[in-house]
Length: 189
Image (cartoon, rainbow, N blue to C red; front, side, top):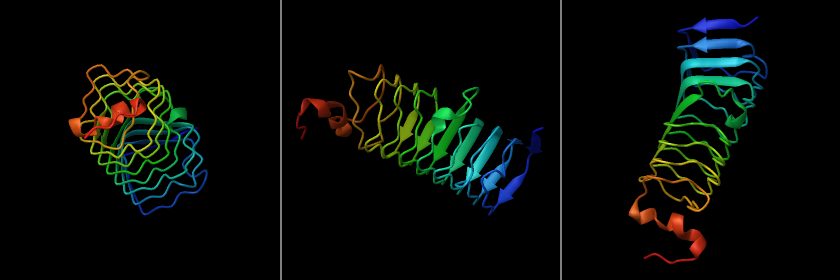
């Protein structure tokens, strides 16, 4: 039996391993909550907002994010690749997602604004129309990704091999073009 919570606010809570299992949250707001110890099982978030929350190293293998917005959150080393893929919609604002994984996910149209995405795994993901607005993509991996119409123009520190990533109509800034030429050992001044 799944517990259902609608239009609730949760503040300053540190959740334990199984506290949220078998629960559905809709139109809920979580502020200053810590989910790091959680090992989620059958948890659904629909139209939920997370403000200043910590998810670092949380096990979110059995979570459904159906329109979730993360603001000022720390989400280090989290594997989104095992989330429920039905209506997987997330957006991130001013978040630290270093070492997280979006491997093979379809995250078309997702927005990453002012985020740290150091060593994030986007391998084989569909990131069509994704906006990377002022994001640090140092060592982020895009091998075999579909990045058509993705917007990288204000982001930096990326290295993307155009022969291994679909980039049709993707947008880049001239000052960061070196991130597309790295494998050719070319010096751009």
